[in-house]
Image 1 (cartoon, rainbow, N blue to C red):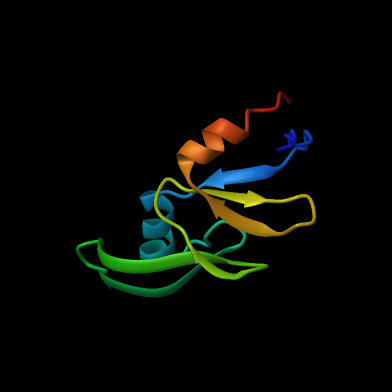
Image 2 (cartoon, rainbow, N blue to C red; image 1 turned 30 degrees about the vertical axis):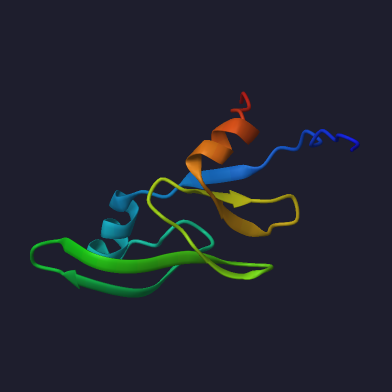
Length: 96
């Protein structure tokens, strides 16, 4: 079977963290571009999250994101989550 190499393209990405979700739920801070919280159960006074569904609207539909996932903005502005191990195997930092 023929083999192919991914063309080098520069993408933007941000790693989704629990701190981002807490800032959104408790301090009304915006989530990074593309991320949406579509359901949550939390205690504001204790600043405790019991459950939350966070994800990205992709070309294939809504995809959930977990803490640690990278939210990638592709070359055409599309966004999608990527697991940390796949991200590390696929991407490397760009200087500047």
